[in-house]
Length: 256
Image 1 (cartoon, rainbow, N blue to C red):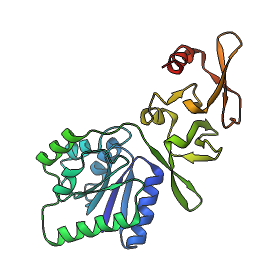
Image 2 (image 1 turned 180 degrees about the vertical axis):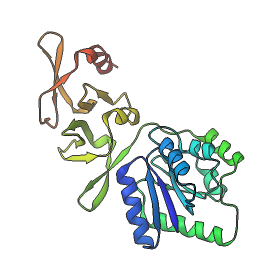
Image 3 (image 1 turned 60 degrees about the vertical axis):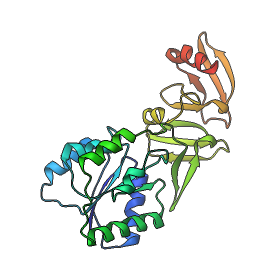
């Protein structure tokens, strides 16, 4: 079976590849693609490729996964993946389409593929027709704020709840998540992307290198004129300042 993975979270894509190999070593992953644009390019440059199944993230780095189906008039069967269980997902199951919630569970993946195989064996229509696609778009009501993030430590993958995160910082070309207990984990997101995923009432981008949660701010000091210095808990590896151009917005955010 040939599959295509369209997923903008590298850790999720890697986990999916591993789980597919565990499910059946004969499964062949044709490509891992992070966006609608790169997926369109891939199909245009691989006209001979015929994936049997596509794992498609609903929310990609540049667009909604639904729009990939639209642009290419895809007839390939699709299993959707999403981090949000608040979506109106009934249309997926009602139309012989399955979905997986992140972090993807091995048993859930196996059930979804088994369902796909059963339906294909029964020669049922598995592609997404235009009416179903329109219904999915109309029902698309995501909670735009993430409530957990997947991290990896060696071979182990697990979730960190957003409520347990003190701040994110960028250092040595990597983005780190710091928990309230002081543990640091590398995550596969830029600070710009995190700014789109997190509740702006709870998190603020204070400079190019730090995105902080409100409970982590212990003290705010005036430093060198109009500059602000923050004391964070747990303590950061370096001194933390609010960029001068963000001071006014930061003060307004604190006073909400």
